[in-house]
Length: 225
Figure 1 (cartoon, rainbow, N blue to C red):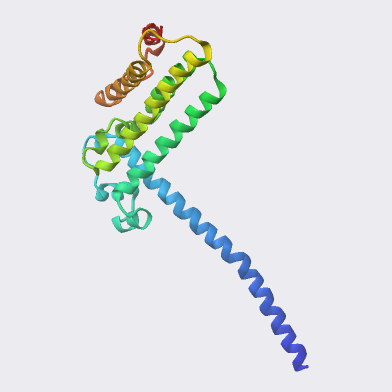
Figure 2 (cartoon, rainbow, N blue to C red; figure 1 turned 180 degrees about the vertical axis):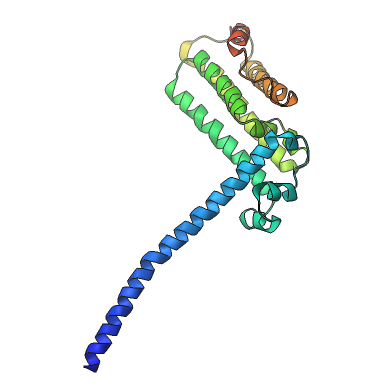
């Protein structure tokens, strides 16, 4: 009888262990999801503040915590510093733009079409994300660590290199070059985009980057002869 009782206890213990084995991973997954959601909430709040009038000033962790509705200590449980928050937003900008540029290069082979789509991508992304545009223009980084601005500089340099490569490939592929040097054209194209982004920020987001693009495009096209 005692032997049977031990079997029952062992069996019940195994059942409890099996249940816990199933519950604990679920709890851990829920905790990870909750933490991820909170991180995203913090980043969205920061982007929203950059879009508002707060974006023209230095955003402190105290202001951000109040906007999210948590303590500053809670912010630091998800990000070790405000710099890391900006790093995450810049990473989103990089991934969004570079991945879409790669898709354009994959789907389109015509040089002019590629250039046009990349310009529209840059302007459209900025227009849909005003807060992030403050980061792209450097306005939001004036009060932050220099390496953040360096990271944005590297992103635009990377895009300029890609534009230059696209222009150079036309001569290789089609045997047709341009009147102006490809490096000059690439920097001019990027300068146009940067100018439209700066105007967008300077006007407190009234002048949208894509406004009258169809009118401006023929002017750009005359340089690509």
